[in-house]
Length: 434
Picture (cartoon, rainbow, N blue to C red):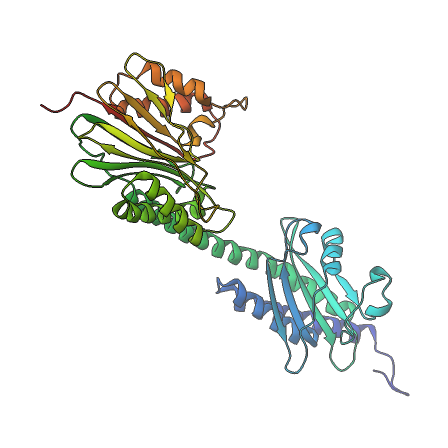
């Protein structure tokens, strides 16, 4: 500063000082560009930006906050990186500041927080003496805030500090956004690979081929709505002449349902070996699933044991869609005996029924993704359409009938995306082996 007797600076001296400040700013920006240009880590880049900003304007602490696109998302900060000088507390970036920046998208300098008219009613931390916040904008959209607190030596931030910090933010915003998008892309690639592996594992849990049983033509197929699904079907040998046939539907879709589906598969294979009847198998499965499943999840299940010696099917239906049973020359009936869905009650007295299943009989078991598939007019495929398809193609092989059902559902849905897993199991009685 000029003292007594010191002549005021001339225009030339002021120009020299202005040019000196410009050179210093360019040097700061050039060093920053080199420091952040070689990194693809958003956290590393943000730490570097904050360190350089604190040094450039002489402040105690800085924070970069990446935010959502809308003001009401200000409470959902995506990333927050803080750098604080030793011995100073980490200040909280108020939601009011983020909201203000969403609306105004311009630098904000506050050298007297308690009395600033723009933030009446905001209780400021007593340790905040001053702050300078600038928007980080990418393609006209606010992507974050760079905020520094407390000018050192009890000073106040200047217009020059604000201009320099705004330039740093403008130069850095796209670099941070590029690094963040790169990390997001890597995360998505990793997630897709994990889902692919999960789908492979889930496919391996389902039967690769139907059982070849004398006097029966059997097939099954599951089409998940997502990469992985919650539908499950299985053919489990019980002994030399009995095979368990089951179709389950786990509530929900995607990876959570797939994990519970794997639990269901392991549970059913275990109880099948230890149970004498479908009723006891379903009751034991219900108990085990109740103990290992959260209260908001449940499973519907059709579980039957086919006896090729007696040519009968003993089944228990735990809250599942009622399968269609067609007798040769007769009207279709539904298999309803059983009880409630699995895993919602610790104990339940399930029931079972034994029915003949001989030559010419046709059993179609399906998940609700078949009948609940909707078309662009929001009409469900429904049980009547399913019954009509079965009636029309009942003389096809079991595998062909399944393909006819799924094709009919897809034609009905048209361009409407599949909303739920679709699974069908067909058992046809054929002439007994000679």
